[in-house]
Length: 383
Image (cartoon, rainbow, N blue to C red):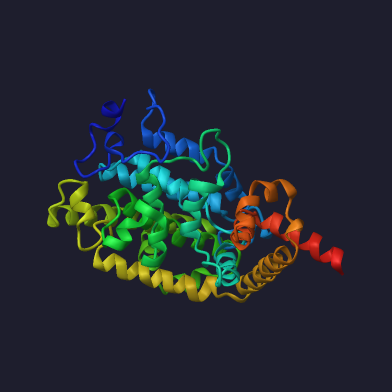
């Protein structure tokens, strides 16, 4: 099965047959590759389903038309899979990493992560990237023979975009590349860039739809204005959201084409023959050309200043801070506020001095809606 599916991949792509394997040994699948099995386990996980009700930029109850972590994740998987195919990399591994990369995200997006990290500052901190790894290695609870999803080493390692040396030491072999200063696989590098392509451009669409940013502002960006001119030349009578949608399509196309072209050039210039060459590179192999990198950075700065720092978005952030900080405090004061079955499952950790981490895991796994309901239930009863 491995040879049939993977024999057309580039020599530097990761192959299932060369995988470092799973933490717990399992029978080799007969009708799919190891990385396909990983992808399917992720899709069927509880954490993956919960992404539907977790914030991307706009809080879930703001409206059904905005992207959630789930729709964002699916978009990342589509973009990264297409780019992976063009680069002759392992599409299944790329897709598995894409689908799992946000499993550790808190309710209320990055605001939730920041406040949970603050709550945990004396207890090891919180970082969604490492939490994603924690979800797939420990917190998913579906299988009789092991905790977590027991994914391949390459999928688990690929999820870790960044990690301090201090934290890497606690992650064993998965964290070793951060200590040894090695690069991640091309599949992992590609997923990281495609994640950025997806959220930058789709946040434009959601931001305009929410009337937080406007086309007149976007026209000041060369990357937007130049693609919009192409759209209007082809469709001179086009108006409204269709201009935005068509322009964003062209921007994504521009970015992906540049990414593929520049990455192929890097592979040649760096003399990449196999996956070990990728590991030993002094810099990332997958990436934009200097020109496109600059244009993309302008777009990121624009979104940061005009969308993520918009007063209405800040207001949502303040609400997220209030909910999560108060929930953490309430559970710390009385852990019996958490359902008994969850407490019993984690009793050994709680009694071993890891009460804070158990509470953190519980809050991080919440959806926006559930966190808000829990907050209302606890604090309305007290008032």
